[in-house]
Image (cartoon, rainbow, N blue to C red):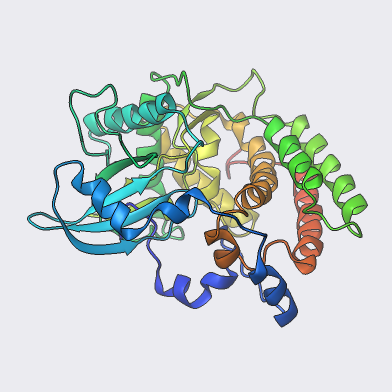
Length: 371
């Protein structure tokens, strides 16, 4: 594996029906046909990112490519493993145009470097031009890109309590640095994003007319429940976070985790970097969070009140995820990679998913086993 998201055997077998959140969908033939047609796609910027452009971009940094390019499993950006003539392959990340400003990317890179200098196992981007205002960022054919060393590893075992304890330790260290490195340009976690996601889907005709009333009703209930335990509340500290700390962004190597892909680095409560590591029933989640927090608190105190934010954050992620897919639907890679999205069956099942989320939001929050 690498610091891009490479396809595993499971990805290759199930990739067409994986919703990128670990859920599997079985598509009826008619759904697959409708979805595979996708939108009326005009030229998308990434269609201009040909293999020749990738090679030319890397060689513009003074490196000589050997023409071996492997596209890695990344949707938001484009990520490639690129072979070099006289050195190990590198990972090239081409940022999605118009998503982040140069200042936001600079802050992402500075945060990774700060963590690396504190001997936290992260993978910082390689310096391209020391004289540049952003030495780790370059631009070629209107694409901002950076280069990383290749990082091997495997996924952590989230049912292994020792792995969870170590993850807690290192996330505690990341947060100890993040608390003293406040973002000035990166975005903050906002529940308004859920309302914005709903509005985008409705205003752009993604929700079928026959389920539109049911969708609006259940989303409004979910948003109201999220607001009752808002992650924006002043009672919680907001610090600089990884932002998307799930198992796919952690590579296990040399008996420890390595954290990659800080593309979604944000400001928010600490629990945002912990809850995605939990799975199973309540008893399992309690055992898991106990190990994580025990490791975390070796380096930074954890506010147990933040446990009540887990379900609101999960619901917010689901709402935003659908809008993320919809906003990227003009990118040819998305209809091909997510053929189950935007089918009548998908939206019907999504409404059922939202009802389950609402039930979870109304249940008693997760607690530590001894609390």
